[in-house]
Image 1 (cartoon, rainbow over the protein chains, first blue to last red):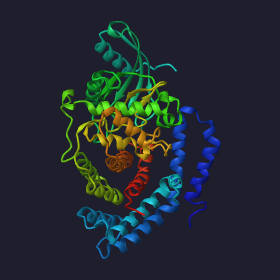
Image 2 (spheres, each protein chain N blue to C red):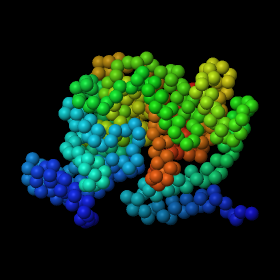
Image 3 (cartoon, rainbow over the protein chains, first blue to last red):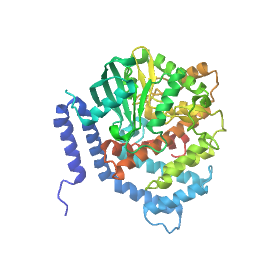
Length: 126
Length: 340
C-alpha cells in the first residue's frame, strides 16, 4: 500500500504553499525562477495524474490503426508509425490519412493537457 | 554591490587593454537577464585613453556551453554583426572578438550596449514602446526588408551556405536528420515534416535571412526600433521564412490576436514590408512558413530540452523548454488542418 497523500496530491499542496507563502517573500531577481519551479510542479502533478492514461490510450489507438505488427509497446508502435509516414503510405484524402491525423491530434491534445492546459483554454479546446 | 576582483576579471581587463591600447578598469560585470544559459553580460569599463577614452557601456557575449547545431559560433556571429552593421543595418556595433581560451575559457565578443527593451512580454504589453506598436512594427518591417536587400556575396561571409535543393526542402531534411538522432520518436513532428515536404513552395529568391527575427530579439527604444539582436542563426534563405517566423504564435507573448510578434496584425506587417521592399508577398507562402516556424521552434525546443534530459547540463529552464513542444505540435496540426 502506498501512503496517502500520493505524489500528485503532495505536489499540488507543495505548489500551493510555494505560491501562497514563499513567492511573496522572494526577491525580484529570483521571482522568475520561483515561477518556473511552480510551473514545473504543476506539470509534474498533471503528468502523474494524466500521463499514464494518455500513453495507454495512444497505444490502444495505434495498435488498431497500424494493424498486425511486431511492435508491442508504445515506443515501437510510434517508430513503426514514423517508418510508414516516411515511406509515404498515408495519402492525403484517404480515410487512413484522416484516421492517423485524428490519432495524432488526440496525442498532441493529451500532451498539452499535461504541459500547458491554459493553451487549450485560449483555443477554446479542452 | 561590489565587483569581486577575480583573476578572470583581471584577464578580461588585460584583453580589453590590449584591444584598445590603453589601461582598462572594469567597473561592472554581471549577467544580463533572459536566456536559458547566461550568454550576455553587462560590462562597464573605464578606458584610460585612446579612441575609447572614458566610461564605456558594453555587452560581452559568450558561446553557449552546448550550442544549438544550426547556430553559428561567436566568431562567425561577430563577423555577421560587423558586416551588417557596416552596411547600415540596425545591429549592435561589435568591437572585439576574443578566441583566446585562456581569457574566459570560451570565445566571446564585446559590443556596445544600446538602450531599449528586448524582453518580449514587456514589449507586447507596453504600447508606448518603440514609438507605439504601429510604428515599431513598421520599422521592423522596413529593417527586415533592408536586411533582405543586402547582397550576401558582398559581405565577405564565406561560411554562409545556400540551402539546397531549396530553403524549404533543406529545412525539412534538417529537421528529420535531428529526429533521427533524438532518443524519442516524435510522430506529430514527422507528420508535420511530411506536410512541409508535400506543400513546399517553389524556390524563390535566396537572400541573407536573420532566421530569428522576432519579438524578444530586438531592442525597442522610446521612439522606435533601436537594433536587431541575436544574429547567430543568420544564413541564406527564403525571405518569406523570416516573415513567417515573426508571425509564429510563440513570439506573441500572450498577445495572441496580434499575429506579427504580438504587436501588429500580419497584414499590417506584410504591407509595410511590401512598401519597403517593393516586392509583392505571396500570402500563401507566409502561411507555409508559419507552419515551418512552429516545426523549427519545436526542433530547437527538443534540442534545448535534450541538453537537460541528457544530463549534460541540468537546468530547470531547459527542462521546461521541452514542455513547449506539445503545444507547438498541436499548432502544426491546427494550421495544416491535419488533425481534428
